[in-house]
Amino acid sequence: MPPNVLLLGIQGSGKGTQAKRIASEYDSPHVATGDILRKAIDDGTPLGRQVEDILARGELVPDATMIDLIRERLTESEGFVLDGFPRTMAQAEALDDMLAEIGRPLDVVFVLQVPDDVARERLAKRAVEEGRADDTPDAIDTRIATYHRETEPIVEHYRARGSLVPIPGTGTVEEVFRQIQDALEQVAVRQ
Ligand code: AMP
Image (cartoon, rainbow, N blue to C red):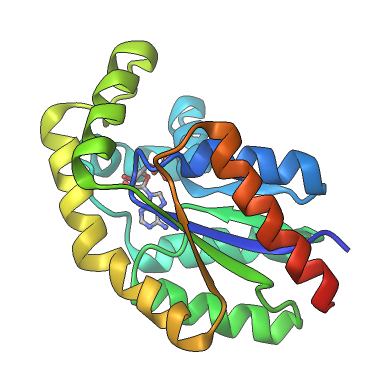
């Protein structure tokens, strides 16, 4: 069975890159809410029009919208690598309920740890390379502050449950992935 993985970490922590690696190595679909929202914006769907300005400012899309979106995806997939959701305690509680309902508990919750200044530098670099609409200095500041205020409490929530595996995110992509792999192998042994 592909594992059910949740990845937490500030924007610029390398979360998206690692999530893609895990998804391809372990055959678990990569469910990245930021990517889903950006595609909706590019496609000009009603959801895209609703969230476009919110993303550009670096603020959070309302919980109810995100919870509906995720419910659809998770019931469709076998195993998952969740990237970008949950971002608030309300989302985390909704996720826990949803997973209990469908009988697919999280196998592991990773948090990629990088200092704010490293995250800020990486995001500034990505702004030049990829030209993402929300990589402006103001939106980056908002996203970092929002992470500390809204998302960090989730890290403690999963730590208290014993499913949290902190990973230093400052190494190379390969080094970070190797540590993730080690932790996933231990999960597989326990299953
Ligand atoms: P990301 O690609 O994960 O950095 O997400 C880009 C943007 O999409 C965020 O800054 C938010 O505006 C929005 N977004 C993505 N996931 C969520 C979520 N779970 N809750 C609220 N907003 C989200």
